Structures are given as structure tokens and as C-alpha cells.
Image 1 (cartoon, rainbow, N blue to C red):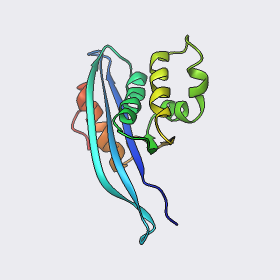
Image 2: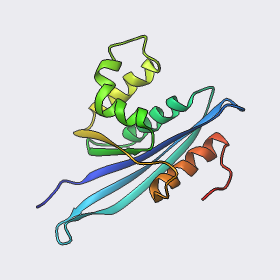
Image 3: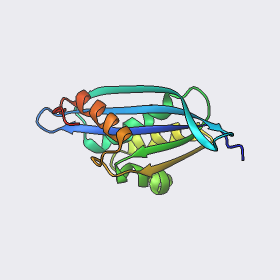
Image 4: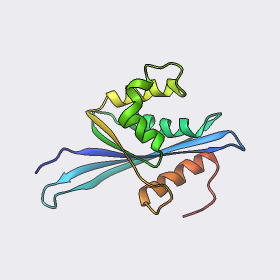
Length: 155
């Protein structure tokens, strides 16, 4: 079996109520199907994080996915990996109805997420339990928390 190459985007958002500052992060992992070993192999990785002033936790989760998708320069098969059920369910179930409702919270970002998602061949989202020793989730969590100024040096 020869599967197409794909990109996994590991995302996270963080927010500090005290400072009213958020941070988002993503890690892009470019994967190629290894016919001989019948598994995907990591061929390249890119990461990014950023601080955003005056935001919310949910906005940071959504923005991480938008920016990760927009960082890709050509249409891809994409799997977004997140510990935020809100983001995963939005991508997999709710986005078509959310973009039709201008009263929906974060409607502006829902429109942007829809645009970013539509540039790619197939975009699905997978939920992972946060803070459960998932190496990729822990890495992106650290990046997002550092951007928001909430990192306390946990491993």
C-alpha cells in the first residue's frame, strides 16, 4: 500500500487572565509514507508560537489551527492534533453551521478557519488528552504557555 504524504499539525493555545494575554503555538510535521516499513516517517518539522494581547483561551486554540494551516504553502492532507475538544469538534462537526451564524462566538475566526481549511485536500482533527505525557502535545503546550507568559517550567 502506498499512502500519500501528509502533514500533522499539533496545536495548542494558552491564556493568562491576570495579564489578559494569550499565546498560541503549532508544530508542523511533514510525513512521508515509507513503503518498506509501512509507516509514516517524519521528514521535516517547523514550529511557531506567538503572543496575542486581549484574547481568550478558545480564540488561541482556533488561531493555532488557522495559522498552522496557513503556514502550509500548497494543498495537503492534514491532521490537526489538539487537546481542545472545542477545536476538534469545530473542525470535524460544527464548522459548516458556525460560519452561517454571525452571532456565534468567535465568528470571525470561524470564517478564517473555514478559509484555511478549504485550501487543503482533506483536514481532520484528532483529540489527545492534555497533560498526559504525550510528547508532541507537551512540546506545543510549552510553546503556547511561554508565548502567553504562563509557563512555570513543568515538564
